[in-house]
Structure formats: C-alpha cells, structure tokens
Length: 207
Image 1 (cartoon, rainbow, N blue to C red):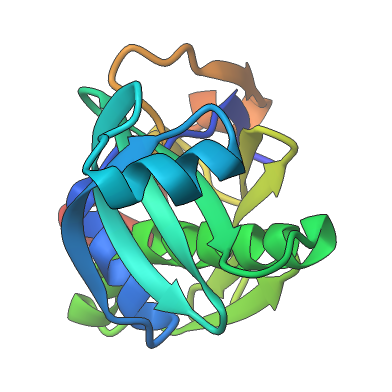
Image 2 (image 1 turned 180 degrees about the horizontal axis):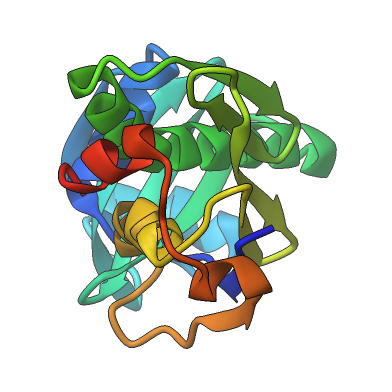
C-alpha cells in the first residue's frame, strides 16, 4: 500500500448526513428533540410540554416503527441514535446504525468517484459490510479502501507512487472526521517514489 491512515469516525457534516438519508431512501427533517432520563418520564412529561433536561437540534429520519436521530452535540459533531416506538431491540438498532454509517461513508467516497468520472477514469466499487473498496485505473490496478473498525475509520491506498495518495483521501477525511481529529498514518516506500503514471499525473490535477 502507499499509505494506511486510521482516525476516529465522526458524523461531522450536516450535508453528508442528509445525503446519507437519501441513499437509504429515507425522508428526513430538521427538528428539536429532547432527552429524558427515563421512558416513563418521556411518556408522561412530554405530554405536559416538558422539554426534558437536554435539547438538541437534530436531523431525523423515519424508519419502520421508529426513527434515526442525528443529534448535534457540538460544532462538527453529530451523534446517532436509533429509537423504536414500542419495543427495544439492540440487534435491530445496530443493523440500522450500520446501514446509516455505511451510507455516510459512501457519501464521502462519492466525492472521489465524481472526480474519477470527470477524468473518465475507470473504476469499480465493492460494497463491504463495514464500508467500501474502490479499484480504479486503466486496469483497475489502484485501490482505495475505506472501512469502519469499531469507532474508527481505516483508509488504505495501494499501488500509487508519490504524494497523490494523500490528495486522493483528503475529501474523505474531511467528511468522516472532525477538523481536530488525529490522523495516524503509516507511510510506505511508494510515497517517496516519483509519480510516473501519466493517467495519475493528469488525475492528480483534479484533486
């Protein structure tokens, strides 16, 4: 690989959150939601107009029997919650959380794919249970992998010489991490080699 970078995953872009809902064909809206200490308190006190002990500006999407909430905790930091109205199923909630995370990762990778399209660069996308792998180039000889591992994102670029590998991932890191996030990068020997591939030389001008 040219490099491998690991960083904390964060829902940091409101625009990307909305696009992720669209990828899942879920209509969303911006609402104020409230945090209650107990479900009983929520059922009783909300009817009386009590707004809970915390309020959040949230992007909300309706799913079968419940909602997905992206609550704004602070600047550039949204937290995902899945809530069902009549039952609690941790496994089902995790399935929805993973679906949304993968859609959000796909939105970030779309920024790279659009630039590949603009340059008529061949590519193929492989959807994984925890992210995406993109093979691109005339013979699909270059690889970009963006996968979630627990609360982290691991991105790997393979087959590319020179510093183009870092340009390739800047858009992804901008969407998937906070501006102050620490990026832990393992560099490979290819990064110090001269970029000689004409296809990549032309492509790098778009990044």
